[in-house]
Image (cartoon, rainbow, N blue to C red; front, side, top):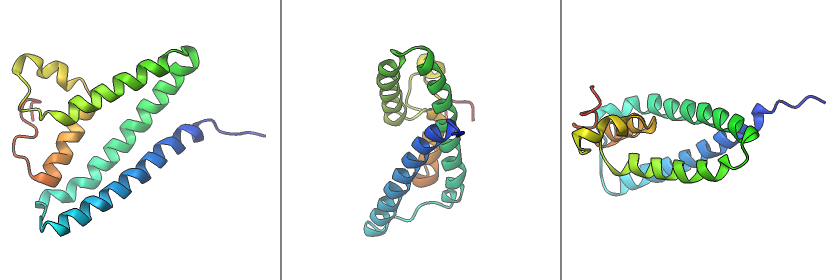
Length: 132
């Protein structure tokens, strides 16, 4: 019986996406509770959600192929992805010193997180430093 192995990776991304949607629902409840009206740029939010979904699916497929060949890649992947997501969500692109911006921009999630900030918070300097 044929079983497509890509379903395993896709199911992992989809369950994380459902977790994201539940967190987004809590965010909407908190925005209503605190009487915060997001800017008009919130209409671009589905674009950034699709970017996150595509990026996570692509990286998941790439890492799954590497994990088949190198078994120790699992522990390296967990620690490095946690560090990369922490750094990308902690600093805005405009705050990072000029000499580290190129290194910071190599993280694929930096632009997407800055896009989420722009959509939800209206951060004016969200894309400064990345050439936008």
